[in-house]
Length: 345
Image (cartoon, rainbow, N blue to C red; front, side, top):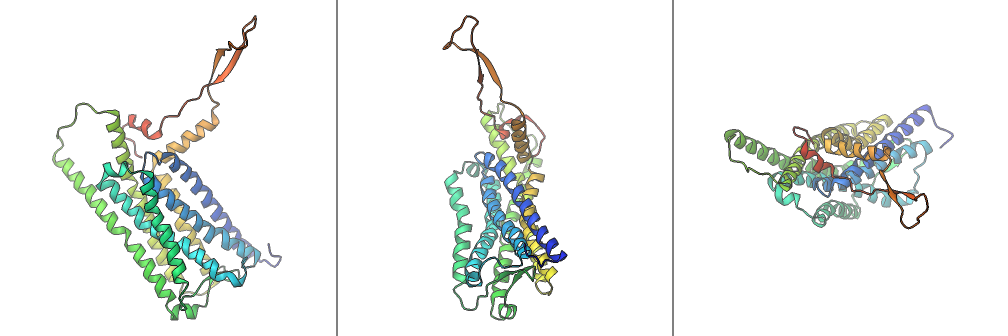
């Protein structure tokens, strides 16, 4: 920590670091629950990948600039600004391209529910890798052009800085605007189609309320219906997430035209907040995640069950009693909820 810090420096840096660390911790907690559930809930596999992109951005726009402000130093040498910015843009574009992929996953879960819920891990991994590979290639390619201006963290500016005159005149600003606006538009056709399909499906159910149903529902059928219901309800936080991303980008676009270190600091806060809010939305709208976390907490607070069993290997006159822990497999939270009617995800 620099000895020449002002009260403003301490506040700005400490807030960004605390905000970033808090967001990262919440992300890992929610991702832990999603990881346990992703075998049955395919949609969580896409959200896990998006969650890791958000964690990188929480470091990038929260912890990192906070350290720069408190140290009053750029941390990395000036000579490698170009290389550092390749990484910064890589993580940014990876996050950006996750939005249409997640939106497509919501449409697929609603339009092809039986196919989607049977999707294997490898196809899901290949699909989400598109965002990471495209982001890396785009970042590498854009930095080869002479008109592209790299940004860097400036401790005096409380955020990112650059040669802003060249940034605006040579086309870098227009390039970012084009890609970011496109990324804001792409998810909405998928969400619009998903909502339209849901409304049409609901209308059909209202028109024929007395349609024939199977007299016997197997456990596998109930489980499939439960999975489809969870996938469908994940649509709500994903749409809100995308809308908040659009609002955040509009605020950043307006703020970038205003000079001042606190404006640049606010841009860092908004960028970090776009990632911070995602796990909170999933916790709010997905009760299956909340139940999984509560179940994990209860397991840690409850001692494992044990049984008293006669130990025949070591006989004695009074009888030798050994304690044996009973190992059992905890039933799936998703399967347990099929017995509870009228609950949300």
